[in-house]
Length: 86
Image 1 (tube, rainbow, N blue to C red):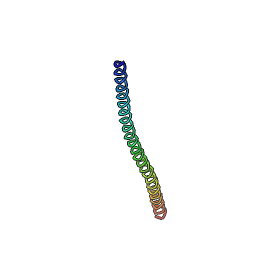
Image 2: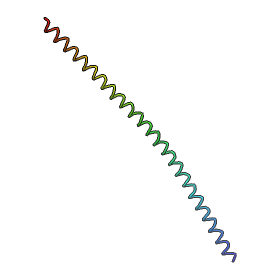
Image 3: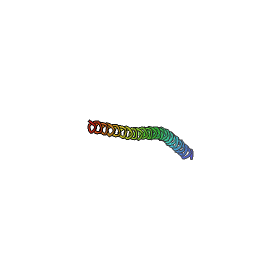
């Protein structure tokens, strides 16, 4: 009877240890997931920031292209007018 009790107690202790180890591993994995989630959110914010800057740069390029086109047209018109009046 005593032997069965001791075996039962050992099994119980073994199961408690296995449970504690599994819980520790679960906690570690949860911490890693939280850390990775933080990285993903940070990368997402950086991506959004860069996309915003890219769009702003494209809009600025378009604006400058229109200004240059206007200057070229004005210059050509002035040259044509000057050439026709000479």
